[in-house]
Length: 112
Length: 116
Image 1 (cartoon, rainbow over the protein chains, first blue to last red):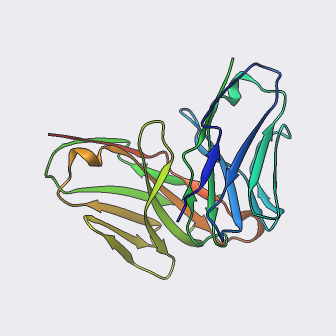
Image 2 (cartoon, rainbow over the protein chains, first blue to last red):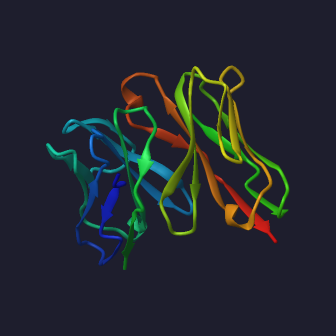
């Protein structure tokens, strides 16, 4: 079966711009989580959606937001980009939260 | 607040060695523990998932154990190969209520290099 698909794979944006990343979970998976990975901070949890509802949110500023659609696909948006937002953004899906997660290949965002 | 620590931070071994990676967590109220592998610039590949009621899981040359009471897990890799070279990440899913949904807490990882 198809895995978790993240698009685009790479992005280069300028400070101040906004960006939208997309994640298509494994078919049948209703939980989608997002993580930011940087060399200094490691993997940090952004938020989790289940059946279109945000159930949990990490400690990130309000510039980071997300949503989930009725087909479980999810998007995350970062507004007013800062240099420090450069990172690998990973999406993970699960049949139901806490049943083990499958990760996508990530979106590499570079802010210049 | 759950904290996960992995030891060692880096490990370099010759091909063929058996090795152990360690993971410790501070809050024993976990739902499960998952070991991942990450190749440079890539996403995470799930290796093993251990539910809180289980003591160990095995897949091929990999064996992971879980001791909830002591807050520890180990990943055992038998007969290591150069293709095993990667970063290995331990992640804990907690069941501490509303703030735990969909959230995995990760360790910083162990960078493994297996040389021929």
